[in-house]
Image (tube, rainbow, N blue to C red):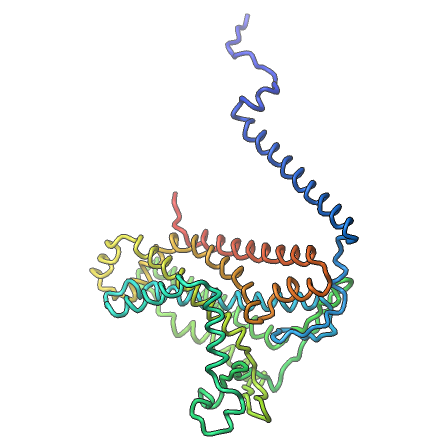
Length: 425
C-alpha cells in the first residue's frame, strides 16, 4: 500500500486574480489596457462627431494637392507647383539637417567646456563657467532671435563687396563670403561624376521623388569599407597586445587605409571646388547657407552644449580621484589620462542624461518658425494647415514625426549606452 504525502492540488479560482501575487500584476495590466483602449475609442469617436458637425471628415487627400508656396532652404527639388506632401518632405529633411548638425556640434562643445570647467587654470575655468551659466539661464528663443539679428544686421550686403570696405571682404583666401543674405561657401563638384539616380516611389507617394548622387554613394561606401579594415587592423593589434604586452603602432597604417583609397577615388571622379563669385547684385556659385539655418544651428548647439557641459563635468567628477592619481603615478600625461581612463569610466554617467539633451535639441528645432527657417513645423504644421484647413491631420502628422524622431534617437543612444557601460558578472 502506497501513502502519498503531496498536498492536494486545488483548481484555479477567480479570486486568485486579485489576491494571488502571481496573477495580480497581469490583472492590473489588462484592466489598464482596457481602460486606455476605451478612452482612445471615446476620443476618436468624439473627434469624428465634432468634425461631422463642422462638415469635415478626416482625410489626408490634401497632401496630394498643389502647395502654392515657396521654401527658401531645401535639400531636394521643390517649387510652388509641388504638392503639400513634397513640401512636408522638404520640411522634414530641413528638421533632420539642423537636428543632426546641432547634436554633433553640441556634443563637441559640451565635452570641450565640460573639461575646461575642471581646469586648474582659474581664468580658463571661469570663462567656461561664464559660457555655461550664460547660455543655459537665458531662454533658447532669445538666443535664436539675437544670433539671427546679429547675422542679419551686422554683416555686409553683397553689393558692399564691390567697394573698399575692409569689413566686406571674403574669407579664407576669397573662398567664403559672409553676407546679410547668408554665407556662401565652396561647393564640391566632380568633373567625371557618375551622375544622379532618381528614386520615384509608386502610387500615392509618387510626389516624394528625389535624386541620389552616385558620387556621394561611392564615397560613403569607400569610407565604410576603410573603417571596417581599420577595425580589423586594430583588432589584430589588440590580440598582439594581449599575447605579448606590446601593442603595435597602427596610427599611420589606419591613416593610410582611410586617406589613400578615398583620395584615389576623388582623383578618379575629378573632384574640385566651385567657389562663390560676385556677379551683379549677389553671389553666384558655391553653396548658399541662409542665415536662418546658421542662426538656428548655432543657437541650438550653444544652448544645448551648455547643458551637456554640466553633464560631462558631473560624469568626470563621479570618477574617483584615485584613478587620476594612479595614472599620473604611471607617468601618463593629463590629456592621455582624460581620454584613456577618466572619460571611458564617466560614460556610464554621461550618456543617460545626454540622451535627454539630444531629444530636447531635436524638439527645440521647432522654434525655427521664429526666424523663418522652413522646417516641418513651418511647412506641414504651419502654411499647409493654414491653406488647407486640415489642422487636425496636419498637427497629428507633425506630432507623429517628432515621436518617431525621438524614438529613433532614444533607441540609437540606448544601444550605444549598452555598448559602453561597464560589464558586470
